[in-house]
Figure 1: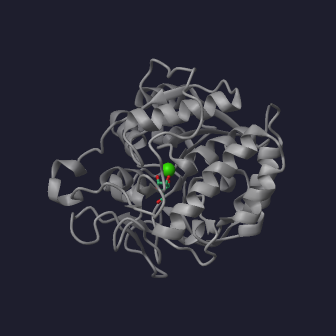
Figure 2: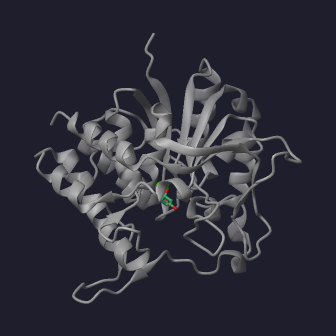
Length: 330
Ligand code: RIB
Ligand code: CA
């Protein structure tokens, strides 16, 4: 009986999702049994192709299942999300605007293919057949997970834990009130909050305090290991983009949001100042649409439903990431 944590990653790959997949695959404490893709940072064809490119780089055999291409309901009201195109800005000397996520990761076009089963049905089939020992790690919009819960509510009793990257209490990024993954599909996030599953939330309050810096990417490049180089490429791209779009406390650093959620799966001590409270999502479509509403009261009107990390251990996270990528055997 393996004591590894069995996980299914749900990704909108993305530069930080890519690092999350690599570390999940290489962390000896994790058994990455499958990866599901969802629209988010980019449209579904891009997020799926990028996920396959990472799988090929890793020479991995985990199945990749393509999921939902659009949020459950939020895009039905065009004024609700406006014409969000993601942050971008023109930087002198660059031929196109810089974004945190590129359409394609700078990796060779994929060779591996997606599985025929849609991600939502993969969740339902896999969870219903399981012994209740699978952890879901969604690090994009929660559309796939919520759709699976709506189609087969029984899966909620078969999920060991949900460790999700999303939300923010004192920090936001996509709007005055919201973090991207939750903002992109607020109804899906509320369905997950109401699921009754054990939930650990890794929000911006934690991820933005665990930035990886240029000294660490320089070190990664000395390892002469294609995965370490790919991680350095993703993080250096993020450092450049963040310095222009969302400057962090240390200008030559950037958060690698999704990888912190993966680290927390088998190394919960990386999260600090963790609250156990009630978390709900604003789905009103107003200014605060997609906000994670974290109940600050000692008593809560509704049952407490999530552990919410307000901080993180940056050095532990960085050393974990280095240890993971060093394990890659070309
Ligand atoms: O807000 C950060 C989150 O949004 C990360 O998961 C990033 O990949 C984007 O999906
Ligand atoms: Ca993501």
